Amino acid sequence: MPQQSSGAGGSGKRISPIQLQKHLKGTNYPASKNDLVQRAQDNKASPEIVDKIRQLPADRFGSPKDVMKALGQTE
Image 1: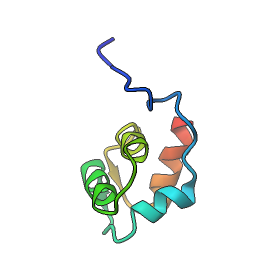
Image 2: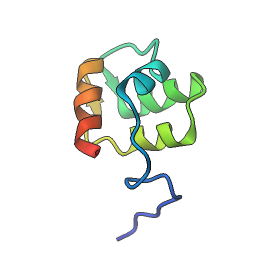
Image 3: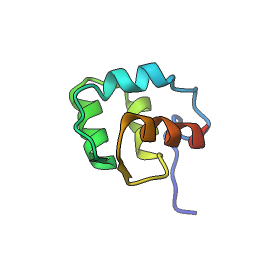
């Protein structure tokens, strides 16, 4: 299994939907996972939040609701 954990991976603390959406403010949908990562970094998201976005099971999202649904699948 090639996945490495930096301590913030799947066993990290829960990210609230409000916290995540705050860091995705300004995203134009549909958006790719890379778009979300870039937007979160631009909005000064913590490394834990950026890692959580990278762990989302989908690669494209049609709306913030799709992001929240994917977030629920990772917890």
